[in-house]
Amino acid sequence: MDDSFYRPTGDPSRFESTQHTQGPWGPGLQHAGPPSALLVRAIEALPSTVSGEAHLARLTVDILGAVPVEELTVTATVLRPGRSVELVEAAASAGGRPVMVARGWRIRRTDLDLPRPALPHHEKAPMRPSVATAFTDPAWRIGYLGAVEWRFISGHFEKPGPALVWARPRIALVAGEKMSPAQRLVALADSGNGLSRVLDMATWWFINTELTVHLHRPPVGDWVCVRARTTLSEGGTGLATTLLYDDHGPVGQGAQALLVGPRP
Image: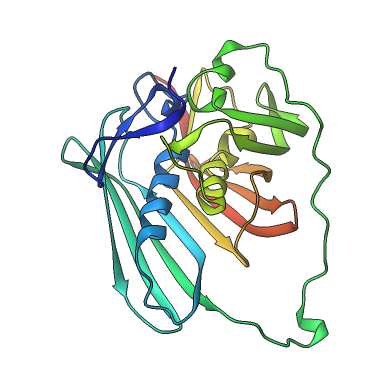
């Protein structure tokens, strides 16, 4: 049985997608979480021009089209080098067709003696349940959704509305590698739309066209907590927003612009 979302092919820029990347919108189509994490992996592998430690403070992933469960080619480059900040980009293609592109700002980190009012309150992360959440519908136990351990505090995939959940992937992003905290966070942040859905997936589309994540510090650890909420418009658009935590407390927030409409 596959134990990763992707398998290396021998070419460092090409990856074979496994069954665990499949999303809920259709057979043979990936959930955007794993390929978004793959783009983060490519960015993390780029040598930084920033002086000292570089922090990925903002990442925007644009979904250019459906991502098939097929071989992906991933490339990355530094678009705007700098000693304090740099702009980086990673792109994924399938069958010669661009499917996703990500741009991120990496900012230098350094120890500063900030005045006390400028420091955030040390809010604790929500308490993590001791056991994984069970699902009655088998649709929530296959592909990407089944490859992640979900521990809901409130809400549920099977119940529409806002949700608060701890989660961690059960498998590696790329076979033989350990996922970095940033890869893990981005893979899970893309779930905000599905976690907080307000419509029935069987009769409605509510597909995110992008994912934007802002992080005020680097994430740590294996677990990510997502507090998700969706707002829809009569005009057929929507917005899913997430607050993101690790075991040390708040780490950032995410947002997804949504395309909404009835299924044919």
